[in-house]
Length: 169
Image (cartoon, rainbow, N blue to C red):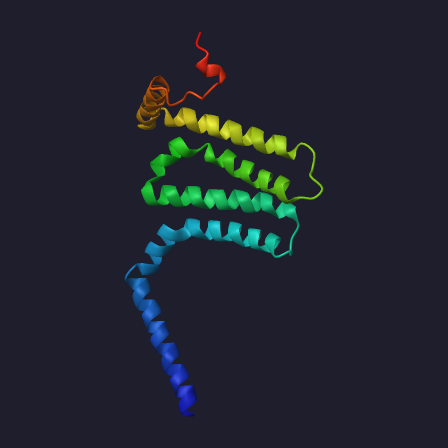
């Protein structure tokens, strides 16, 4: 054997040993359990790349948007616990809304009714998400925001000069 082949063979053997060692130490299992949602996100982003490089038509943005949103949702649940899914399940509808809206945005000529479907799905998703978050600590954040907004209006910061709100009752 030549010395070039010996180096290649030696490098292959070292890499094989490192892969086996890392596998036995559980590194690949950890990465697989932790980062699998990124694979879904990457597929969604690759679909977007196909469209934006003019290799696919706009209808591919529907599954691209869905997969991108789902990948983010699964990564959030994977990092902070799958118990969050009991509150974040409306994001499944939001994924379809994003995909359909992207299709409407980039398709030419604009398809009829697609924007209405996207807005309806998005609105339903956000309303359901709002009501599911009311069962969490988010209700306290909402209460503080409402109090702050009320104080802002009471202090006169919300008044516009010469507007209808300045005329009084």
